[in-house]
Picture 1 (cartoon, helix red, strand yellow):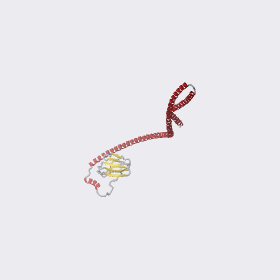
Picture 2 (cartoon, helix red, strand yellow):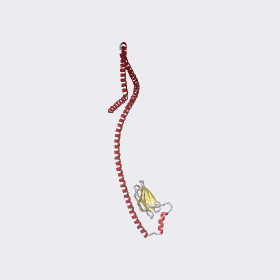
Picture 3 (cartoon, one colour):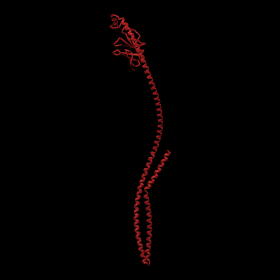
Picture 4 (spheres, rainbow, N blue to C red):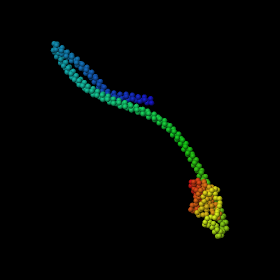
Length: 340
């Protein structure tokens, strides 16, 4: 701050010197003419004094000539003196005219000096105002510089905080990316396990279907050998076609390892579907006078709470407690659709 004040004072001093130089240059001609005027006036005063002395000499000569006896000499002196007087009178007239001109120019120069002094006063007033404005601007500049320094310091602090925040954000992003990668790996592993479970279930269903097919084929062979009569066939059918209230339990069997939450009849066959808390859907064939398990539909992660056949009886839909719905094929017992 002290250095700024010294520089400011040097600038003001340089400007004042430059202003004095410029203002003095404007009055150089006036000063020169004024000096010439004083010189001319002094010269005229000297000539006037000489003229007075010559006149006194002439008067004394005239007086002595009138009192003496030399008439010719007095005439010659008078002639010479008259010529000198005429010459001096002409010179006095010229000097008076020049003096008048110089007085006139002096008045003009005096008026010019007054005008220039007025202008100089006005310029000095403007300069003082500008110096005050400059001082105000300098103080404002100093305060702004201090504010700028404070803002630079705060900017550095904010920049450091921003870098620290950026580093924390990068660290958090890296952690998030690592968690997402781990989540993706776990999800892929879960999907792989589910696909394996589905394959295992499909293999079990295929095995069960093959065993059931072999059993049905063997039963058909036995049935072909032991075909019952018409009366016995009618009696078996009448058990399911009697109108009115049931008089007793037709079939009783353990369907699931726990609660049975849903039961549904097939629309085209004498097949009953049951769903229970053991996460399985089981199909039961009740058309031969006995209750026989026809298939097990697996793949649910929670207990079954609802089952439903489609209109063709070829697909069965089940809803479970894990907020999912799954669809199986009745023929091959394969899981077809799983919707979470």
